[in-house]
Structures are given as structure tokens and as C-alpha cells.
Length: 113
Image (tube, rainbow, N blue to C red; front, side):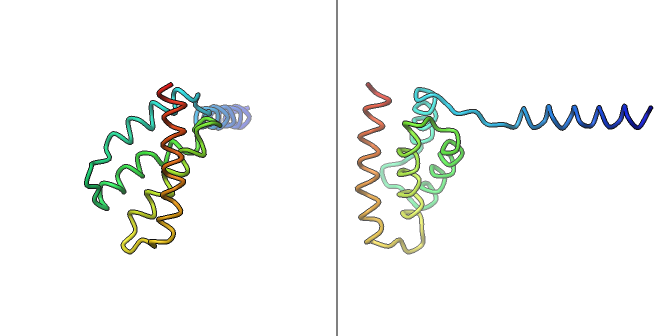
């Protein structure tokens, strides 16, 4: 009987732990708020360290971002990741810059009205 009780308790703990760790998708407003807080750390003269900090602050948001905001968050991260490299590719940075600017426009539309 003790073994059965132990197994049931263990199964219950595993089930409750997995339910707690499941990430839920954010609403667009929640995504906007989180990205806004993280992006507030971008200085005017962004060093590689500052760029990495901002990218790392935004990175966890990408997996839970709303459907509308996911492409925006992804474009921002792609640009910041390339910019933070030791030797960023100017060609790739140019391509990502266009997507980054579009993401900024979309962010403005979705988050600022």
C-alpha cells in the first residue's frame, strides 16, 4: 500500500509541476508591455554589451508573444543578434535593418494605437 501511495503522490507532483511550467501565450497588450520594458534599455550609442543585454531581455518574450507580435519580436531579436556579433555582416545587417524598421512600425501600430 505504501508503494501505491508513493507512486500516486509522485505522479501528482509531476502532473502539477508540468502544469505550472507550461507557458501561456501573452495577449498583444502584454507582449507590447514586456517588449517596451526590455527595449527601454537600448541606449542611443548601443555597445555590444548593451545590445546583448536588451536581446537577452527580449529573448524569453519571443516564445510566449502573441500571434500578432511574434514576427515583430523575432525581427527585433534577429537584428540585435547580428548587431551584437564581433564582426557583423554588413550585407545581412542591411537586410535585417529593413525588417527591424518594419517591426518598429508594426510595434507602433499595435502598441501605441
